[in-house]
Length: 406
Image (cartoon, rainbow, N blue to C red; front, side, top):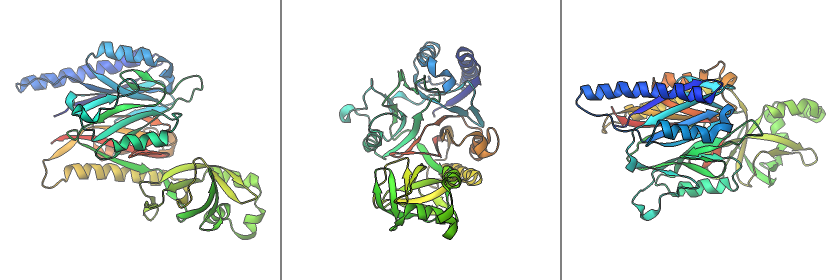
């Protein structure tokens, strides 16, 4: 049975935050070792660790990793820089903080990969089932690298997020036993590491899903044969003479609060009324083209794909987050015919645009997860994009749990 421990701290000095977090982990480890000894057993060695830091510490990546290797020898570390970090029921946004998690997962059941450590070769004897992926969002051809990586797993399922730093002078690094500022890194798990993962969309459609019938690059010109801007105005309730006379200075604020949900051709745009399907990627509207009444979207558009306009909705975000966390718990605990399972540890990657006020109060997003899953070891970060399956999402949360026998 794999053991997971979590710790977190905030402090202006990264050394103090790391020291406080490691002290928490050592205290928890000692307590578990005492329990094991009382039962005539020994605590398994810790093998895999997660370290997520806010971008206040982004300039100290190499020093943080060196300290981790020195203070916790024998552990492989993965992680990333985020706009914020999270633990069970707690989130740190706009303040210097870090979160740590340790696990005793057997070494034979996972493999670290990065620019220095290649993905397990087909003849290595290790078969990847799923993989946690951290990436630099500026990596060229990221949209092609993720599907290629997913194909190397037996499930096609990736989970993780894009490192992000809001300070232009600092790099958004990710971690796989060393600091990287480009490409992909993470850890692959074999089928013996049982994970359950779900994506929650933080946006709600305000109109139907229409087919993109004409586009150029990221400019959507027509939807279902109609000018895209006219479709948007209709969904916003701006019709007739009002639409013709509305000046751009009044229209642009509405565009800033409206987004586009893009779904590949053949996939389900809506899972149910008022809820996007899992293949939908939400992107900003970044401009308009008045002459052809087109709309520019922050992603290349494809003819035949579907687009539904949407808004960020705090209430819908809370309800959908509760739904996926509850579904995960019920899937684990209600597996009839199988051995009873429980949540041993969890990772939560949320969009940097979702935390804090979007859920109504500080820590509300992570407290929603805790209410559904219970007090389980959990760490995560607020990313520049969330990875699930082979896609990079926006305005979503990706919740992944590791299970163990009950």
